[in-house]
Amino acid sequence: QVQLVESGGGSMQAGGSLRLSCAASGLTFRSYTMGWFRQAPGKEREFVASITWSRGTPYYSDSVQGRFTISRDNAENTVYLQMNSLKPEDTAVYYCAADRNPWSLRPKTTITDFGSWGQGTQVTVSS
Image: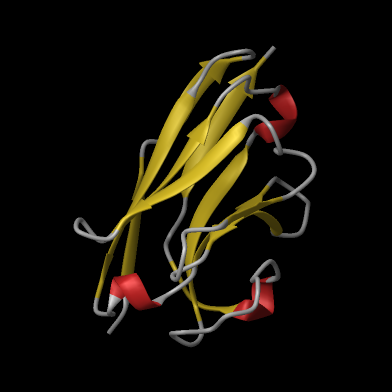
């Protein structure tokens, strides 16, 4: 059974930084593209970033491009999201997700691409 556990959320003032972590178990981590999504109150869950299994190629939403960095440590079965220059509009619950299938070569940026999800961690950014 796949388990994804997020950590690192919290409250921060605008302009600050946070690093989220997601520890994965129950899957061959190095074989899966991993992603981060977020959901703000009253809004739909949206794509933030993903990183491929093969070359660690990152993909970002336009809203976080240049401010957030996704990375992975296959030895530790962990994916990270470094968030810099935080804005109040970044306030949301952040979810870690694993691809539905291993060894997939195409970029993954939609909710339906991912089959396993963590419980989420709250990030609150005040102005």
